[in-house]
Structure formats: structure tokens, C-alpha cells
Amino acid sequence: MSASTPADRLKALGISLPPIAVPAAAYVPYARTGSLVFLSGHIAKRDGKPWVGQLGATISTTEGQAAARAVAIDLLGTLQAAVGDLQRVKRIVKVMSLVNSTSEYTEQHLVTNGCSELLVQVFGPEVGAHARSAFGVAQLPLGSCVEIEMIAEVESA
Image (cartoon, rainbow, N blue to C red; front, side):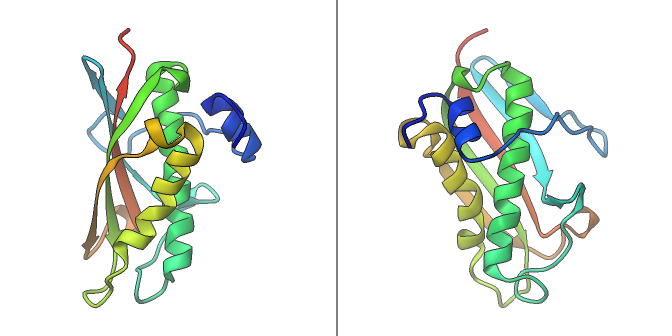
């Protein structure tokens, strides 16, 4: 992609970042220590409501990837609120993905690609490529199909 900044790349992808979400429980959306920003888990939303369903039962892998991509957009909105400008991101360090899935479902890693691939598109491979875990879980808050948390390294304040 020829766009030079994360903001340019988001614009080229037709993505507008949402405002930071208000936590639904007793936690903060992000915590910063030194050059690391830890983003709390964000659940998948569609049309502003939890994207409810279970992979392997009511949601396909392709739909799960779209849900994980939607989570990535929300995570980027929170990260931007945390650091002011996504150009300050030096590296996406780690992504942890929880996929609401049946015990037989084994494509959690493919669902999580919906998030990972967008991060590389926005930041490029040098900054956006990250370590990652993808887990299948029995249920997520509000019945959401996917929840993802992220750790980013950023320029010092």
C-alpha cells in the first residue's frame, strides 16, 4: 500500500476509527507503563451491539474473521486515544484472541487473522506483525463471538 502513515492507510481502506469505548465493568480501556500500552479486551460489535454467536454453531469462520477485523478497528480507536497519533506506535507486540466456539471447532487461528491482517495493513509488516495467541472459549461477555486484547510499544511520552 502506498499510503505512508497509519492514518493515510486507514483512509485508503475506508476506515474511520471509533471513539474510545466506555468500559462495561470495573476496568480501564488501556493502561500504559513505560513504552508499553496494554489494551483491555474488546468484544466484537456489529451496528454498535455485541456481535453474538458461536463459531462452529451459528457463525462461520469467514464471519468470525469479519468480527475479528471489527475488533481490530475498535482496538485501533482505543490505541489512538491512548497515544494521540498512531504514528507514535513503534510495534504491535502481542495480540490475544478469544473465540467463542464449540468444542469441535479448530479454526480460532483463522478467525484471529481478521485482526492480524488488518494490523499489518495499517502499520506495515515491520510495525504491525506481532506475536499472538488464539483460544477457543465456551462463552464471552454478552455472548460476543470474539474478544481481543493487544499490547503495543509506543514512543516515549
